[in-house]
Amino acid sequence: MKRLYFDTPRSFTEYFNERTKEITDHIFNCVREGIEEKKKNILLFEVEVEGNEYMFDISLPKKEWVKALEGCLAHYEELNAEDECIDTYLLMQKLKS
Image (cartoon, rainbow, N blue to C red; front, side):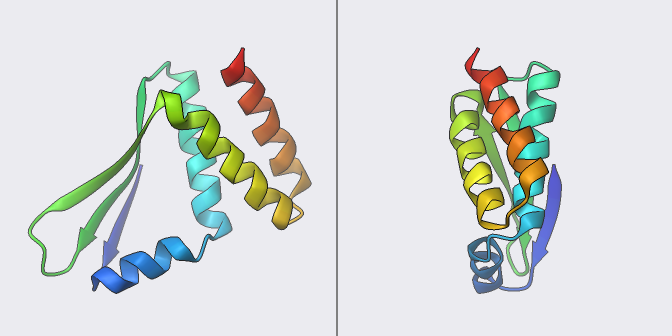
């Protein structure tokens, strides 16, 4: 789980629209850990926005893990990150079996 703090709601939106390798790596690692720990749900992010008294959790149920990994794989392909592509593909196969 990664804790994120934003000064405005717009900065939150911009952060996730950037689609950085850091976010992709984090999602991949959370899914991998979820599989290893036999979880049914994983917490990806805790988000806090300045001026808001609440903290928001972004989680992912197990039924969505393959879809999340497909997104990771597509992003890794765009980045020509071959090792990450292989690792992601193998993790997807593990989930599907």
